[in-house]
Image 1 (cartoon, rainbow, N blue to C red):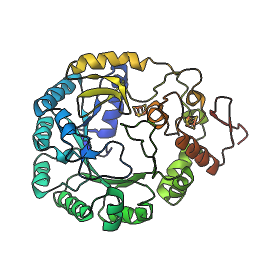
Image 2 (image 1 turned 180 degrees about the vertical axis):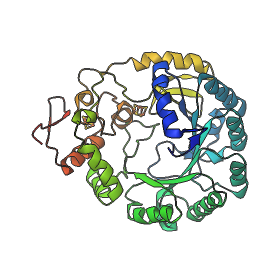
Image 3 (image 1 turned 60 degrees about the vertical axis):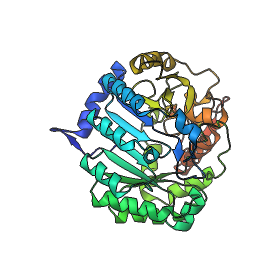
Image 4 (image 1 turned 30 degrees about the horizontal axis):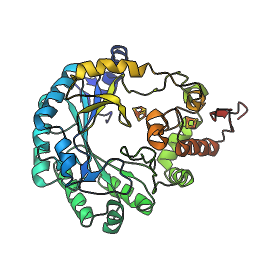
Length: 377
Ligand code: SF4
Ligand code: SF4
């Protein structure tokens, strides 16, 4: 979401901040993600959810067009405003443009996540006739060779560049991003330069998700936390953001002391729907959810209040951590990482320690393993 557009006479930022208290108090599902498919034309080494483009069994399980429409009706009725359409690769669905047009008619502010390789002139024209709120394309490198190494496919780099040019020619709102793994890490400066040369924002992450269909599975190509810290250091803008975060005067802002297992937006204002119609409380935890083919959205959302009340068990270190606001670990990440949502993830724990150390915070761990800031630092 960008913070620069204006809605009527009120700025977007002012509008959203005014809305947020009411949204939280009323538990309004104002922002959601709809995954249209797990299938993808690429086979990226780091992907957490892709299945082959031609996987017929996966395709048969996907929501049909009328089922998607019914779900869009339900979430619009419940108050959803911001909707992200993602995958897999959304453009693999033959009915993508129909779904898009229907969602536009419902009035959602639509964000599209795509790998960009399928943006033909026809798709770009259709998007230009009813522009989305935002389009985000993930770059996997800055050359054909890197693309081949990361995506496992040939010829995709040129297709992605062509897709980006089509979006730019039509002046659609576009941002670029990347997931950094060992195979494309050397291309990071060139990807950033590519984006900035076209006036586009660019962000990246080295924090990979383990596969959703293999919680606890190995994330083999993830950078080490030490290498991720070096990427931070090499990016002045990011380093400055981290500096502000870790050197904040009021250190209580670095820690959320809620006793809840979930301290994020899940079940308060945000939701996630998978390609098979399962409404998930958290995108990383399939078990906490309801089948929208059987239960209307409003009822499933009402039932989410019970998940929201789940308390963290006393052994959970993250609830006692002095840096849990600055750490990317959460119950969902932990569930995928180790199958145990009551633990922190080792990657995030180490990266948070390294970042804190880089900004002069001395840390100890309590008996549960929670990070504690030495008051003298
Ligand atoms: S730094 Fe460790 S203890 Fe703290 S929130 Fe992250 S994973 Fe949990
Ligand atoms: S992945 Fe983490 S932050 Fe996201 S909804 Fe799940 S618990 Fe919350």
